Length: 239
Image 1 (cartoon, rainbow, N blue to C red):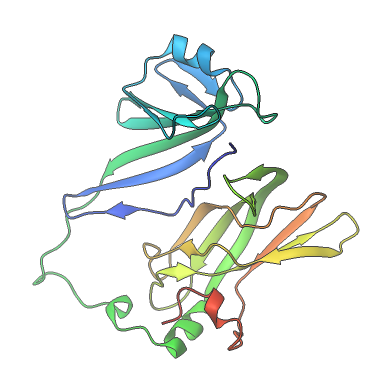
Image 2 (cartoon, rainbow, N blue to C red):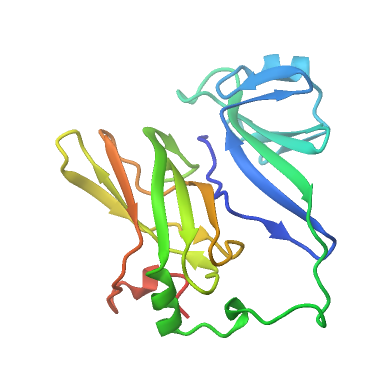
């Protein structure tokens, strides 16, 4: 099994005043022990005890997950067979989940109606999309990310909301180029959850665009200004 895809701008907001942020990391220090992706599962499990352990199936090759609490942080480690498919289990993925307090949600009498609460139309979404900006901070196209074909690349993006409202999702076009500068592939899947990115705000997110290809030397990401009727089905933010 390969590293699972997690889109990282997913902030789970509730009225109880807590938010969770989830991020994939290649290494972590858990309860004083250094853990890295690819490390032997038996070595990790002999050093730290899981608070909870789940197996997704009953056959060899099925991934399993260990949950480890370290202070206010929860780590979820996915174990599975090595890339060859045979041999002792290794650490396939490390997910870091932080719980952070957030300000209480104001009462109705204290809050004001923002443009993002207004019903979205196709025209308002298209106009808002044109004011979003994305910039590639870094990328990793050297390995396959994901659990099923088509696999993904890892792109660290800086997203800026220059519009007057917050879209639920932002669909971007990811282009891949080889060493000669020739474009060898592109994709729009999946969309980036941006509901929590308010007007005027920027954030760096870990994005996993589908369509991994060998030989990729450059990746660009853009917000398309024009959307044809034939391509509209790929844009989840369109009402």
